[in-house]
Length: 385
Image (cartoon, rainbow, N blue to C red; front, side, top):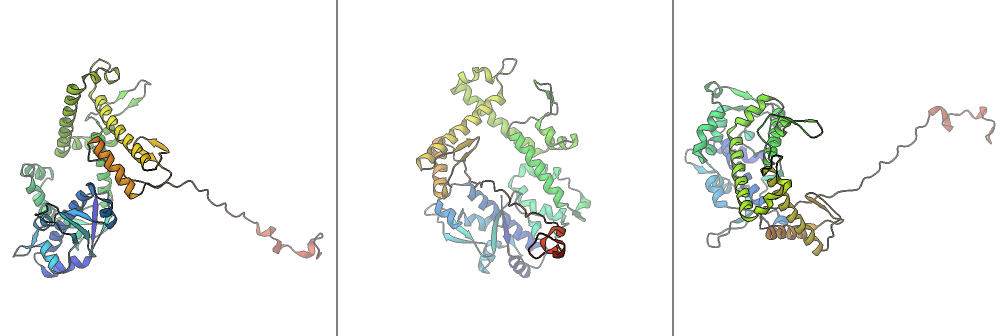
């Protein structure tokens, strides 16, 4: 994800203009920044021209940002309009959009905000609260629900379920809950591994098996979530259930396409189970790996046409002696997307450096053996002896 660092002056100015109710400015700015982060992140996922990337521009709708960015104060002033009027806009329009051209605006970040890549979830309103302590933050449940209310309203059918899962407790509305950030981040990274495993076909099972060598093997989720209580909570969480249902719908569709268009593929013995039935996980693996192979073939071919000869290929990576450069990288990515008819392929590049041997440490000299510590009167073979 993308995380924004906002200059503290912005929040102080908003708090000075809207001092009551308490924390209303922090909550309003938090909602606005969270929406902006999401819009910038969605823009970064789309195909961008090389010039736009070099200039650090993003495609976002300023109209949506203004209307969905929240309001503040008794007169319901839009946060976006207030920031613009006070010269505190977080984004500046370089190429304004227009409903006549059908194009959205190209914007850049203002001096009041900076952008950094982040592996954590987008910021929430509480990270702007002045009461928050970096080492031991406190979040009041009532504030959490207020910040999440708009999210619940976006999908009314999930509102009751989400509140049920959060265990709304009347006592928690009056007391702060201390949060251990280190433990929370570790919990999120645990969760990430489990969701990735589900995406790659892991099953919600706790039963292990012995392979052909007799070695006992546990399912992926048992390895990741070692405690049975953890697995039970994870399996019963409604978002996980919805994700699994979505995966099943996608797998059903792909199996239907294979049966209709390529029925002979399903007769291959390597796609069968020991009982002679078609193995859906094996078919899914074949489809995904085939799609990846096609994309990588386009990558190597296009790179060669651009004068960049591949040195080696490893799964989903290709090694070159020279950097591709931004223009070549974009040309290859567009070729992959157009020839495979999949607009979601994305390329990145990493510079690798050869191993450098450390410089040898200077030899240690015993002070008793140093020439300046020898008594010349006791040395017979020296000229001065």
